[in-house]
Length: 195
Image: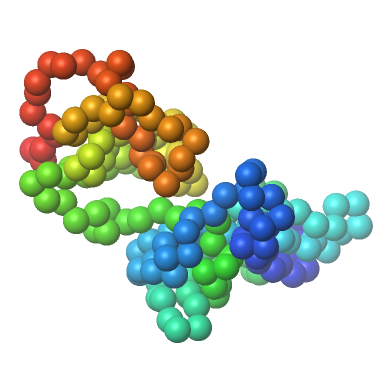
């Protein structure tokens, strides 16, 4: 399918229309991405065909520069619905604004490891899948990412400090969640550390 033109959806507007089902990162996060971070955007693609004139895809863009007018990056996905083309493909230059961002992923360098934290990534070049293990000083999780840098699955590993009696699972500002005390062993162990 040949691409006639494409545009970016306004993620803030989509969130305003469906706040419970279309979540986006906080404005502070959307405004402060750095070179090497990833932003997920919604692409509305118009095709040069009559039977299916428009498709919509969520795709990741690698940020190269954060300027006062917005971001400059390159497409980091191969579109599912398109054949290779010269308008929208892996490596295409993309200019976008914080209002377009619906999700973010940070590079390893953005996690500043300290004596109280741990971050490690294992990547399979053959499948594109990655496992990221992160201890942020409050809780530790392992995340499985697919080749499009989407979280496929996650697993809680341990809490740090005092275990909470209960957790409000609906309060997404508390992500990543600690596990409540009823599900946590009292066995003392050493947290993860770099090898």
